[in-house]
Every structure is written in C-alpha cells, then in structure tokens.
Amino acid sequence: MAQLYLVRHGQASFGAADYDKLSEIGHQQSVLLGQYFAQRDIKFDSVVTGDMRRHKETAAGIQKGGESTIPVITDAGWNEFDFNAVVSSYLALNPTMRPAGDAPRADFYRLLKNAMLAWSKQEIGQELPESWSQFTGRVAGAVERICASENKNVLVASSGGAIAITMMNMLGLTVEKTVNFNLQIKNTSINHFFFNRDGIQLSSFNNVGHLDLPEHKALITYS
Image (cartoon, rainbow, N blue to C red; front, side):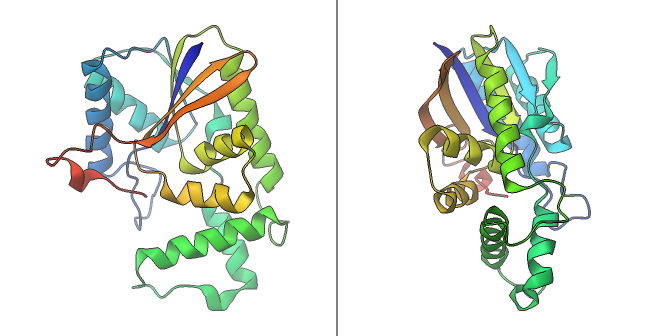
C-alpha cells in the first residue's frame, strides 16, 4: 500500500493581525521535520497543501530541511474551516461566553470547542461560508483524490480541523471526539496512513519525533 504523511502546519501567529502565517517557531518546526524525514530516508513523490499561507510555508520548510524541490500541488479541500467566522457566529448568540482579553489560552480553546459543537448541530451557521457537512464533505473529497492517485509516498500539509475530520470519517468517531482530536493535534505532527484505491488505514497519530528531544521540547506547540 502507498503511504500518506498528513502533517499539521507549523505554529501560526496566534493573536497577531494575520494568523495565517508561521511564527518563527513554526518555521523552525517545519525545517526540523524536513531534516527528520531526510535522516530516515523518507522521500515523497507528491507534496500537497491546502490553499493557505501557513500550509504552504510549512511545506516549504519541510522541503528546505530535507533539501527537496518537489513541485507542490494545491488542493483547497485540505483548507481549515473558517474558525473566526464560526466563533463569531457562536458569540453572537452567546455573548457571555466571550473570554476576557487576558484570559488563559485554555479559555479560547474551550470557546472554540463549544462553537464547533454548536456548528455541527446547526445551532449556528446560517451565514457562515460553509456548513459542517460541507466541511466534512470537502475533506473527504481531498482524501479520495489522494487515494485515487498513482503516488506511493504523499506528504500533505494541512490543518488540525481537516486532520480531525479525516480521522472522523475513517474511524466513525462522534463529533465530540473529533473536536477533542482537533484540539490536541500538535504543530508539525505526523499523522501516518496507508492507502489504496479502496481507502485509508491509520498507522500512527500526532507524532512529533523531530521535536521529542530535550533540545527541542520547547518547540512543541498546539496553535
């Protein structure tokens, strides 16, 4: 069977005006991952990203670290959902749930979890760019395109939401478990699958072997 390495993007710019770009740590994580792949002689015949800056910068960092120059294919099916729109829609109906500006980051994760659950239940979202079912469907379509390809080793740089939906569709997870998966996926983590034209099978989830060393543990992040 062929292999899919589904990687979450490096740390983005949480709290900045433009979240959709890697932080300095995000760039470091990506290069280290590329070096990790090269040291283990893991080579790719296809590199795919969503149509988001943080996805493309992550793939570029991986290729830099691995000294690879494979042309990158863009597939918007791997894009993250618009979490700002989802949270804003939820807060419009639940204004008391808005965290204070100096609240711990955990409060923002709790808000995102509640907003995603409400979105999945169609309690919010009439004005959103896409519904929960549209989001899960387009991710399923992106996976199907990988499975239908002739490639044997595929690298995909995407986001936590798309990775969690891939797990949900494959394992038959509940929405609540899927949201919990989403919130625990580490930046530049490796999610390894085997695939063929019949579908995909999970091999490992949320691995950060490139960061799980004393000198790099400070680089393990979740946003």
